[in-house]
Image (cartoon, rainbow, N blue to C red; front, side, top):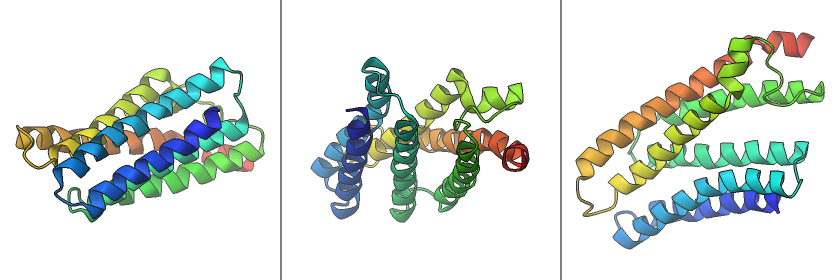
Length: 194
């Protein structure tokens, strides 16, 4: 069930992206896209909860969750750049960081280490795996994506204010993206050669 939820949320996000891209400026489509965006990110927490509740925790499930996270967040970064809402640097940074860290984590998994368990240095471990950092990064991404979609709904009140908050939240999210990727890169040599 948890793996189904992980996959289902990708399709929910694709539906939201379709509505944004294909029905540009349509209030109803953008409202539905906002709702679907909220659902897609809510399901990210639900899949983990279901996996733990029903004892469905597995390496495959962890990989599926990471894969789903990457697909969902990178699609939004790319979509927002294609729409002209964000600078192209946002998706380029997110994609590059994802390729680098996921490649290193794949090498770690071949050696029996978990994606977050590969960190040895306590500071690196805290940056990549602590509940505080993971939740803060997730909240920044979700807030940025939801607020960006909300700011673009035609006729929404306070659109300029919502957009300003959305933009700076996106900046915070992309900074967190880089900061949380650095420890993986710092410890890569030990993992690959060790």
